[in-house]
Amino acid sequence: RRLGPLLIGLTLLLSACGREDLSTLRPQGSVAEGQYGLMKLSIGIMIFVMVVVFGIAAYVWVKFRRKPGQNEIPEQVEGNFKLEVIWTAIPIILVLILAVPTIQKVFAFGEDYSADKNAIKVKVTSHLFWWEFTYPDYGITTAQDLIIPTNKKIALELKTADVLHSFWVPSLAGKTDTNTDGTINKTWIETSKEGVYLGKCAELCGPSHAFMEFKVKSVSQDSFDKWVVSMKEPVQTIEDPAVAEVFKSQCLSCHAVGEQGGSAGPNLTGIGSRESIASILLNAEGSGNTVDGKPVKDNLVEWLTDPQLVKPGNKMPSPKEDLGLTDAEIKAIAEYLADSKVSY
Ligand code: CUA
Image (tube, rainbow, N blue to C red; front, side):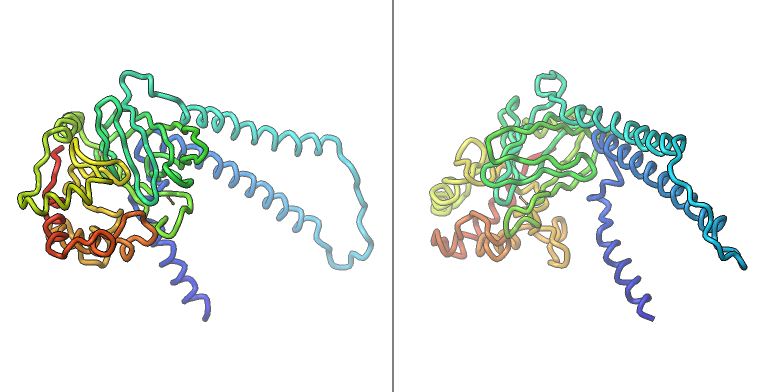
């Protein structure tokens, strides 16, 4: 009677884990496909070992069970050279079958493509609690959405600006830590089809670790080229000169828009084209926030009014409490940001 609810609970729990866009079991790129291959190989070996061991055990239990009327202890056997060689050799062979492709893949995934002319170099910097992507060859810096063309190797160089984080796009590539000792970790991704691939921070890093998401948006080469051009076009400014001044003095000291601004916070160029800001805010399930249906602005207002409520522990000063912005200024800035779009 207790089993029913338990099974239902377990099913619900597991189905929640099955978010398609966050599954390593649906690999979409060559790196993830290689890793999935290793998973299948190791699980295959495990199943083989289990079946053989349990099979032999079952055979022994049945064959040598105590028969009716059998009262004496059977003959005791100690040591069998042939058997011992066999059960030592088989595990060694299995470990080798597992080790050789694993070592090959580990080196292949750590391959440095940054000198490859056909690869696109991206420097990834993790921050509490957001991701910065810099394309040194294009002079572009952006945040949260990593835009890449399909069928191209993207050479990633990863570091952190503060604490240890880990870069993870389950359907594209395994976790790569961003180290605190200044060493740069390298990895690469490649997508074979266009789409949006969700990424997560995979290292407990603070109160908003769970919200430290990002997206990899794989687009056609044409779209990517269009995006590069669009990111470098002169940006619109805020119409109202008073609000523009507030934006410049308060927001641009940390954030950049186009050519202007600081680099302490996420680059906001084209932020209106991101479905989410603060990682989950705009598309948080159950919040009723939609991108096409409902304006993004309301959520931006919510964020700008009380960032700590939305994403606890983040480093952004409260525009209202700390910087003294009025509700009207916040609304105007939110509207401006929501309309700051890039095309691709
Ligand atoms: Cu960054 Cu967890």
